[in-house]
Image 1 (cartoon, rainbow, N blue to C red):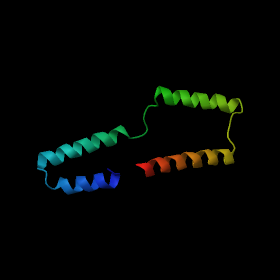
Image 2: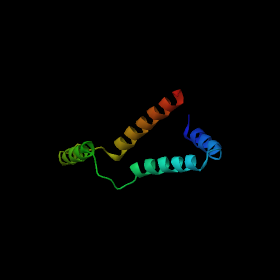
Image 3: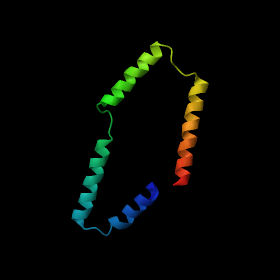
Length: 86
């Protein structure tokens, strides 16, 4: 199911719910949205990656703009290919 399909399903079914059902859906959506709010505490993994990037920078291990663009373009192409396969 795509995001658009999920939203359409929710919208189609929402009007059939009683008040308690609507309140339950609203509560779920609020809880999910709260989990993704920023700012938030960084995870140990994120902090480790920041420290690693600082060390890489100090050691001269960096990408040029062209290398960075090529890397991102390749990653996006792979992601598009995976999405197309479904």
